[in-house]
Structure formats: C-alpha cells, structure tokens
Length: 222
Ligand code: C5P
Figure 1 (cartoon, helix red, strand yellow):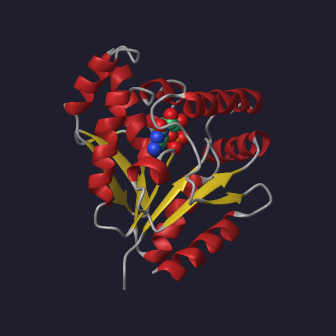
Figure 2 (cartoon, rainbow, N blue to C red; figure 1 turned 135 degrees about the vertical axis):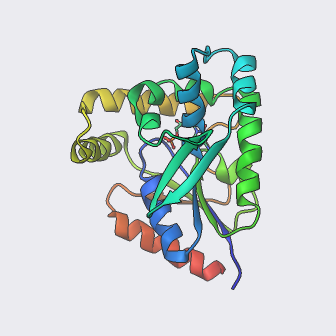
C-alpha cells in the first residue's frame, strides 16, 4: 500500500501531539514532533548561555548539534548529541523562550531542512505550526486542529496535574495566548491553516473522536 504524509498543525496545546502519536501508531507510521526540535535547540541554548535573540549564534549552535527523535517503548524520546532531554524540553523556561528561537529565519531553514529529510519517504505523521504550509506542502492529508484558549488551557492543566507537574490554570492561559500570538505574528512561516487543510475544532470532541476522523480520512487517501 501507498504510504502517505499527514501534516497536523494548530495553535499551542490543541492536542496535536496526542492525536498525531495515536494516528501514527494505528497506521504504523512514524510520528515526528517538530516542536520538540525547536524545544531541543532552545534548551541547549539556555543551558549553554547562548542569547536566544542572537540569530547567528543560535544558528551556529544548531549546526553543531544533532537532534534525534527516537521511539522508545511507544513514547518519543528526544536526544541532543545522545543526551536524553525528553523531560527537560517541557520545562516552563523552555516553553516560554521557544517562540523567540523559532522566529529566526536561519534557524527555521535548518530545522525545516532536517524535517523534510525525515519525512521524505512518506509514512509520517508530522505535527507543528508550518507543516502543511512549508515543511510538507505536498502532504496528502493536512489537518488544522483548533480549540478555544480556555479549553486548551484546561486540558493542559489537567494533563500537568496527572503527570505530577506544578500547574496554574491562569498562568497557562496567559502563556498559551502569548505563544500563539508570537507564532501567528512572526514574519517567517507563521502559524496558518494551509488552504487545503481540513479544520477540526476539537472543543467538543474526545481524543478518540478526533483520531477516528483523521484515520478515516487517511484511509481514503491511501
Ligand atoms: O508543538 P510545541 O508546542 O511543542 O512547539 C513549541 C514551539 O515551537 C511553538 O510554540 C513554536 O514557536 C515552535 N514551532 C514552530 N514550528 C513548528 C513547530 C513548533 O515554530 N513546526
């Protein structure tokens, strides 16, 4: 059977990674979390004292590190030069700096290039902000996931508490709005629904329902 490419974009905390991971699993496709790559660079920059506003330094740093996305017993592990940073890249310091890092043109060029390399064989579910518009413009299926800020913050809050992470709902709401604003308003590949993307508002849907809709559409295209 043919192996298609599936692009899943949308604002922060819309459930993209949860849904993308399950869809990939059901189709035996590879899941690629592109946000994790921007986060891995951000984490490495913060650790090494690199100024996240200095595009040249950041790009130099990026060209010297290897970022690996590994499937480890069903979960995706993120490695920078072999070091496991899966947990570290979710820290709030990283979350609150990543949109600054992701706004730099040359940083995006390099990461988009790596992402296209990872996706060139097809059989991938890739999630991010610019997958349908920039990374995989030829993807056979493009999804744009949406939900209100309120619902997204509540879901993320619940998830944090379940994982035992500290969490503040109002703070989360502010951070999500800020990140959406920078991601939407940046000059290079802003967050935007591709013309041929199918929009799914997940506000009133369960994870299972969203997954089911996407896999059904995928199967029509295989
Ligand atoms: O998906 P996640 O929320 O982990 O992404 C973190 C950040 O990385 C986003 O807020 C955005 O600034 C950036 N990003 C991006 N393009 C992508 C994926 C993520 O700019 N394809």
